Amino acid sequence: TLYEKDGIYYAKVKAKEILIFPDYDYIGLHNYLLVKSVFPNAKLFVPDNYEILLKTKSRTIKTKHGRLQQPSKTVLESQEEIVVKIRTDIFKTSHFVEHQAVF
Image 1 (spheres, one colour):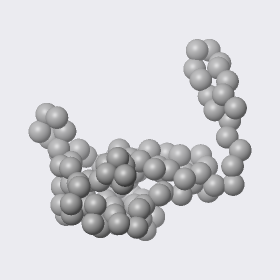
Image 2 (cartoon, helix red, strand yellow; image 1 turned 135 degrees about the vertical axis):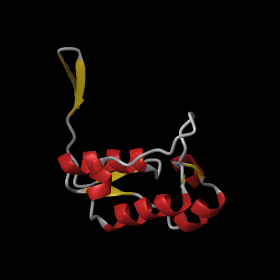
Image 3 (cartoon, rainbow, N blue to C red; image 1 turned 135 degrees about the horizontal axis):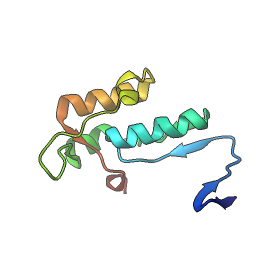
Image 4 (cartoon, rainbow, N blue to C red; image 1 turned 180 degrees about the horizontal axis):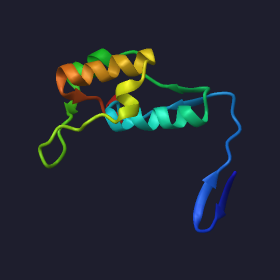
């Protein structure tokens, strides 16, 4: 259900589970953790071939201005296993997998 209040649109969601399918970069991880903070049953979709995609289809974590994207405090402090794994992959490789690479 979508509704508007004071010019801001809100969605009311009723679901047993929410599957999040972001880019696998710091922003995507942050957005996933944000959703999970509101919907504790949210899950991060990670394709079975994530490791292969990281090696063959990944992009640099550098911004268009040449600086490395920085993780938020939320991402840095997360202890969720999959977030730690992806965060560590980004630290080690300076690359990330865009969600479009899955297809």
